[in-house]
Image 1 (tube, rainbow, N blue to C red):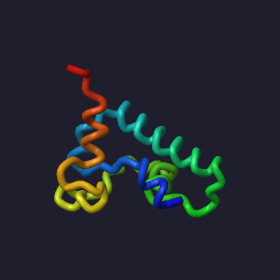
Image 2: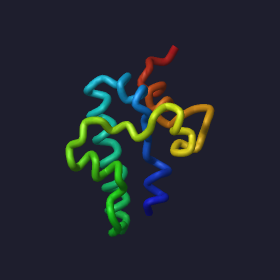
Image 3: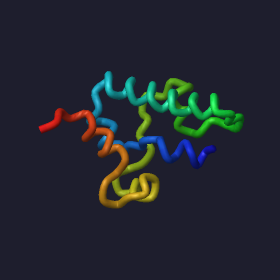
Length: 93
């Protein structure tokens, strides 16, 4: 299930995290917790992923990597998952 959570988790670089306003950070935390709680409701009983532990412990800085190290985490060198999240917050043109 850890692998399943990784499919729906969004990770930010430090630079991306700093671009989010406080409301967006709260929205992000809420959504990641909802994703994990959905997995639990489907029967997952293992340990919580590191991101969920960080949110539950009240950590404020939830970026997971420096800009140059995130390609491996997001699975793409061209477009990071955090950039997708940020672009979804922009109004449509």
